[in-house]
Image (cartoon, rainbow, N blue to C red; front, side, top):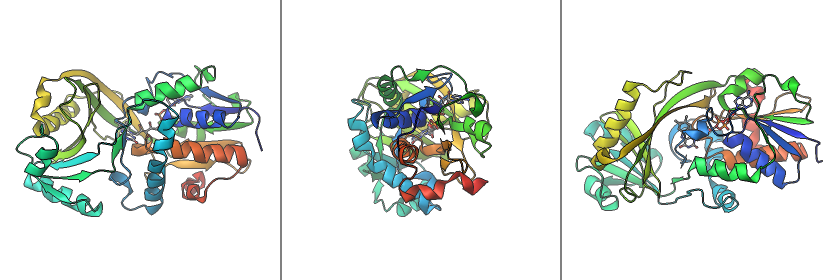
Amino acid sequence: MTPGPVAVVGGGIIGLSIATELLNRGADVTVYDPAPEGADGAWHVAAGMLAPGGESAFEYPHLTRLLEAGYQLWPPFVAGLGDVGYDRAGTLSLALTADDVAEAAREWKHQKLTPLTGSQVRDLETAISPRVRAGAFASAEHQVDPRKVMAALRASLTGRLVTRTVSDLSELDADVIVVAAGHRTGALTGLPIRPVKGQVLRLRGEPGLLRHVLHGAADGRHVYLVPRADGEVVVGATQEERADRMPTAGGVHDLLRAALDLVPGLADHELTEVTVGHRPGTPDNAPILGFLDDDRRVVVAAGHFRNGILLAPITARLIADLVLTGSADPIIDAFAPGRFR
Ligand SMILES: Cc1cc2nc3c(=O)[nH]c(=O)nc-3n(C[C@H](O)[C@H](O)[C@H](O)COP(=O)(O)OP(=O)(O)OC[C@H]3O[C@@H](n4cnc5c(N)ncnc54)[C@H](O)[C@@H]3O)c2cc1C
């Protein structure tokens, strides 16, 4: 079944990935977004870590399965996009103090990573502070530059992007409407999706100071450092239950302090950006994917929280399958909007 016109509400990384997949499979698709260059999108601040094992999924096996399946789709996804900074050097997890080591050891055990001494860590990455006590190497945690991904997706959708806010889904006369408006999806659908604020810094210096993504704790302050090939280092991120767009002195201080504790050489880098974005959070930290109602006209693809970059390719495939055939791989079933209605 090939539907008539498909409208995608939201041109963030989820909306554009879905639209590109639909277009490649022959659909007549239009994307609506008031700020396609990124002023309101979480993708614009996101670091781009592709880390299926870490973070949020400890207690939710369905989400773990989705993250792993999504991770597997990145190589073919990237192959269609060109150079988007996809980097497989891997991630070094670091712990500065004895307390930081005690906390990190639980996560390393959970992820079945072998602990490294401070000097083993510095053998892999010489810029790491001599004060760092221990670490672990996660070779399977990769990174991509979300801004480059978005530029490539936008190019593939030339002529399909309309600069417009959709205030009510009844404004659209498409056969199928995909709602992928990030944290603003709640206002359009009534689903429980909330903004979770994150402050992120971008530093710039000579390329080559760091090779791996670093993820660490320094005196209880958590930080990640994502080095790009051109000398940019993304430093993130706070996590705050707030909707404002204001960078704060405390947020910037905590990120810089932890970053410089772990990698003192960053002190000479230029501070080029301080940005704020909002992760689309849900009550169970898992995305909401599927038909909104029994009439099957509205499809939701939102609530990806901390993993929307990682999950973009698999979301695109599952949602395109739903739109074009009416069904998708059963892995999607655990994420249906109905669990909140
Ligand atoms: C600080 C931070 C760091 C992150 N780091 C990572 C990471 O390392 N790895 C990872 O996988 N994920 C990361 N994420 C999460 C990731 O950025 C999000 O999950 C992802 O961007 C969600 O994609 P989205 O397209 O649903 O929403 P967004 O990227 O927020 O895009 C939503 C789009 O919808 C548009 N829109 C909103 N309302 C309307 C409307 N009414 N009409 C039309 N358009 C509308 C907006 O303009 C925007 O362009 C991070 C997020 C933050 C905030």
